[in-house]
Image 1 (cartoon, one colour):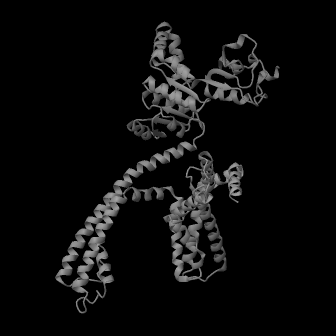
Image 2: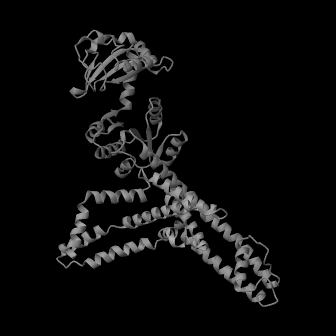
Length: 525
């Protein structure tokens, strides 16, 4: 029997259907980052609110059998959800297998009962957890026929806490400040008990105060007074009672001020955590985006250019002040250490990030970030700033695809300007004057373009006022062929044409590559 049970758990462990289904159940119930969980949460919130709405409707309306059926269906769903949470809370399979293998390693007798007991105790922890008790109170169908017990349906409202992250975060405040709040509750309880006792002793006896007939009336009066509500239905008439009232009122102000201070301080601290989680959630939704490490002057210019060509970007910097500046510009930014591989993985390196650009002034930080990114993703495009020419070889060895040496570039620009000022001014005016709208662009030859297989000289670039600078031959390790108009070059899929021209002309040429009707060279083939 024991051997059969152990074999059964091994069978479950090797069953991809079982493990995948359990992982799906856990994600849909507990993983707030799982993409389908929000739909489940919306459905459950609707179910909770609709059943409470039915309860309110039936207070002064005729009973409908349809609502009974709806209620039973809701209860079945709640039961399935609770059983699912109980199932995924811990893994009996893993406990049994782990204990069994430990016994084999230690050459001792395996005790199946101990493993089952351990797993059962874990299940009990879930069953008696506050949220599980709320679930049970909300799904117990037995009280439904008894009208007086139907008020317990309101416990379903607490189930909404499970489905809303913001409310969960709010509950964390109470957990984080439980010591201060416990102290406050104990102090208030002592004061209420003190006031209730004095009130009952001096005004409780028959004939003293007609509204204080028992100790509960005294407790009720103390609680109403300390909360500063003061309904006025019970008023102290003896000097001792009035003195206690003064103490309770003063203590009430202190309790309100103290509790407000605790909650507002904790809420302010928690808000930063909520904002950070929200940014991380937005990052997870990004597809094919660019990570820019380091928010400084060069980053700002780069970001402006990337936004012009509609690239999605994420700014990362470990300096909170710089992240705050980036957010002021409505950029998606997150504070973190780019040299930390766990952090890089968290923000999408190795998943949906396609490019990472390291722009720190410290080459050591850039090198560490490049190394981490390349370790996580062999295909990600890495561009990095290099300030010391001696570090270039190390950055290339670490996996950088392209290096930016600002000192070298500045020297080249100055040299070109001094040597050929007219040509420099012309190119500067064409490329950087926004009124001219000319640009250097690349046209990637993709599947479906009719130009594939044609000689590059058959393209009438003059008709589009476009100048061909060169071709990147992807079949020959991205070899760049400068001005290939005087050689025979057959265009292949994945080739990249580097051209200079007006945006509209380049766009038109790209479109016409899919349609040989408007491409004159195709008629000549």
